[in-house]
Image (cartoon, rainbow, N blue to C red; front, side, top):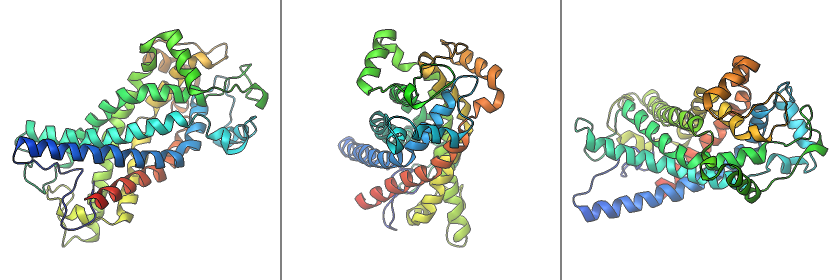
Length: 347
């Protein structure tokens, strides 16, 4: 992943640079952490504003009871616009928690990704250790997986609140008519979860988040790094080394169009690869809101997945995948471009 835009600066994300003494190491790590958290938060918030209406449609498609309420994304979009809130307000319902979550998720991903690379360099002496050297792609994929696993612990409670706010509570199992919608606010949702399930209730669906984030983040960072290196090699084969080369000098010159294309590809890879895990997680987190008589509340990820498979098959596991992939491409492209741009600006 390119993190700077000039020839004389090292890559900030895929090239953790060791310092000669403990004090300088601490100062450098503190500054880098501040950049990761600040720039990652800004990029995540911008990306979430772009994708949130599509995410609302996705959650409603994933969480609907059987028989199905919506015939597809367009029908869900139409019914959402007919809700009492009306228009975009209906599609942006509950965005406060996701904005906070997007800031935490994106900053945590970039921060953990960089820390994982530093740790891996120290644990495996055969990996590149010198300034300006880039880790091989398989090591970067592993660092992405570690980053996702760490982030999943922070993300599950936030996504649980988000899903419960996005899911339309209805008075019957067969309608989502405008009159049937119930307004919910973050504080009321948090209070309800704590009253009914205690503190551990906020981590309901953690296994699904862990699977999605670990595999998805490996695909996210791996695809971004791979596509960016491939674009660099294809456009200037005589100047830049192959994508598997550890020399990162060429990464500092990646134009924004390459970052956008690599980011869009990464978003598609992240969402498609482990989408069934996200579907099962969303159902687990909204089971108690459904009024469908055949919708059971399951205590485990696997039981919820088996029920969904029996009712709707493979199509049910990927319900809402199309709209998710469609919105993830521009959102992920913007996230990487904003983060890389801010990193390059800050030096």
